Length: 405
Ligand SMILES: Nc1ncnc2c1ncn2[C@@H]1O[C@H](COP(=O)(O)OP(=O)(O)OP(=O)(O)O)[C@@H](O)[C@H]1O
Ligand SMILES: [Mg+2]
Image (cartoon, rainbow, N blue to C red; front, side):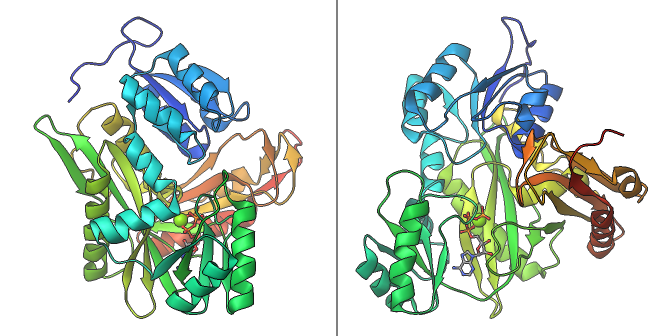
């Protein structure tokens, strides 16, 4: 457990290097800044959100081994915080071997970025319930795998993010095409896919769970899950709310699954364990992010310490006694509708007149269709009131070509 904080821009600085400088990285950076940590933000494009609140920034190809190793050797951080999946894994493994602390650890980063590794780990090593699954190396195997798990089946690349390359197949021919689609959209040179039973999802939970150093050992702490629902076939979520409306037994099962997976992954920091609740009442592990989760942005308004504050503290080796839920709350994404350079957000004044409403405008340098540019957050008497507030605010705000007010 850490007991001392240093001074940034000095020889005593505690230095954190964030690989991936999006909106989640930005909130982590802000929390690190509050602890006087020297923050270095890295991404593949300049002026990314976390760079706005960092001491220094680098623009590199994070999938390139040499570029990742070079920036780490140059900065010599105490902590390397991966904030996205698309990072060169070999570089992280070698840096960890050299003595660098990779959050939560390089093995966990490797397992969680790879759907096949993660499914084997969760279903076979840890033994938590998941959808039926099979792996395939070619079109014929994909069709056989679908027959095995049952049609319709969902075919996903071994590595990709945000639903890229997912295909729902209802027959053999679609399964064979789904294989090609997955390979075409995969990150890296993978030739393997996972084929999953397609379940009827009633709702989805993010069982946020963190590991921290208490001074007498590492403790794993499950939090009350965040809930969200998404229209079928949509790769992004619109709204999440906290706490979940699911009954106690569903919450318990989700937390148990999350704790087992997170304990097995190890390390320090927060994890977002994605749980599918099916219409016939099954509670299934889906995947896990070894970092703050998108849907957990709502914790910025609902908890004593947000998922970002917990992460920042835990990865710095500081203790995090379980934070309390302060208020029910909801979050809604602000998406762009068109590609724009230096866009503006209109309607902010009207939206902020709603009591309990907050806005996060990430400051991304450009937009494209459906890019997440900001967030509406609200607290309320209950989750439904908070949801009504963010929905009302959503009617006012719009990402527009900039006319500065
Ligand atoms: N086997 C399944 N059956 C039914 N729906 C599924 C299944 N697997 C995934 N989904 C739906 O698709 C969404 C995205 O799946 P998944 O989390 O595996 O992909 P992802 O690329 O990591 O996307 P994201 O970045 O949105 O989490 C899930 O949140 C869920 O709504
Ligand atoms: Mg997911």
